[in-house]
Length: 278
Image 1 (cartoon, one colour):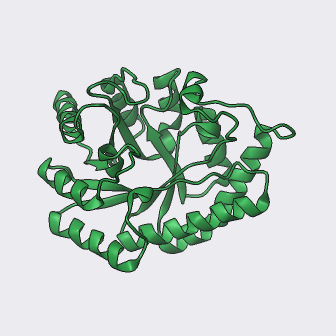
Image 2 (cartoon, one colour):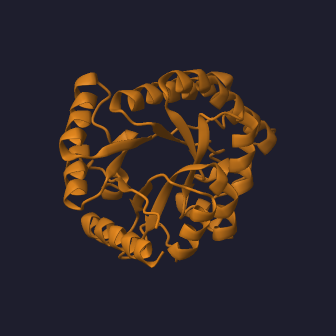
């Protein structure tokens, strides 16, 4: 019987509200909830200085937790080469931070055009948006691939995998995710499967990226979704993962309105119940 290790993203306890939830608080809660590790959201960190990073690493060790991923944000879908280079340098810096934290992966975004400003409207359009006039998605895929390729030497030197998430924009479809990964063709670029980000044809789409997957985001919505809600059948998801031979972490991303600790606890309980049915 295969039991995947279970962790949570620190994002589960902070949904980009004005007051940040400290990473240390999430780590303590994760230990109380008997989780195996944490995925740290980069923008939730208080700073990037060495003292702070080392304190998080030390706390994780004292609590018996892995830091298995640093979730970062970048947007390579920009016509300006100068702007893309800034995103590349940001990503390289995040790889360095992940290395210092002892995290073997960063969450990577392709980025998107930004022609739909409202997130609610973007969701109504299934995460897809029109390109900037004068450019096409083919241009954007080329920019993303070239930008990721620039980051490869740093990723390889540090031993940190870039895990490309199906996260709207160019990666709103499994074909977009696979197109980028196969074009880059490196063991330092894999997929991060988010179970809640393929709004249409969910299971067929997850199956298409499963062979490339190095980390899985488990979405749950206890109390109702903050932005939207999917009724995800995790027995189907786990069958897909088993068929693909997946052995990595299940990283909880709780996006419900219920208290975060309660939502994460219920998610862990649900996952363990599925393990018992295997």
